[in-house]
Image (tube, rainbow, N blue to C red; front, side, top):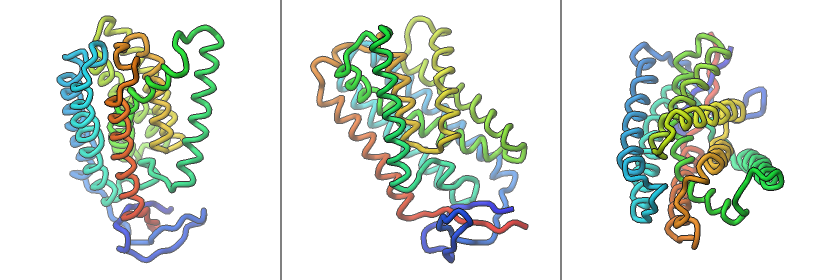
Length: 293
């Protein structure tokens, strides 16, 4: 049986697997008990830090309900870029090099496949927007919906990186011996719970129980999507759309009209940093094919 492991580019001898994917064949490296525990403990610490950051920078200040462009910028830099992207990437890189996860599991695919996945997901999302509008369940116009999408994009990027790229892949690696069904359902339930708690803290307001249930349902949908498609960018679109649908009536309209350049810059910065991360992994690392015993 063949497995996969991540190594730095140039560390092995290139070959090709039966599906035509370029890989590098190296000796199998086992994952010890301490390494297995790190798949749970380290992501848990990162999640706790992220939850505290969400509360301090957004939930406690009612950031999305009482507009503050300065607060939004600070939240984006610290909560999204630093804690939501950079910190998970450091841990993901270690797990990647240990062989616990690979490039395809964390959702960083070649450009052609990424563009195809994003294009199809975006098209489905636009169709859903149009359906909601025609059915009378959508009380905003398309321009406002687009602005909301940009406003929610940084939060969705951080959520996907923490909940599924980090926690989801690590949890699945830890319970992998239980089989595919156990791995998928454990990953879905735990990551949806982390997503529900973090978003409820972030968008703090009345109706705590209702918000947790709504976000948990959205988290389950996003989790199943990520584990099925395994694409970071496509999952970000799904999560962003979910946040727009769930939070559109609770967002301070000052963020939306007139369209603030700060909102646009926050979205561009977050997406730009993730593009850089994706490029770095694609440029310097590869998934390797490991021979079975």
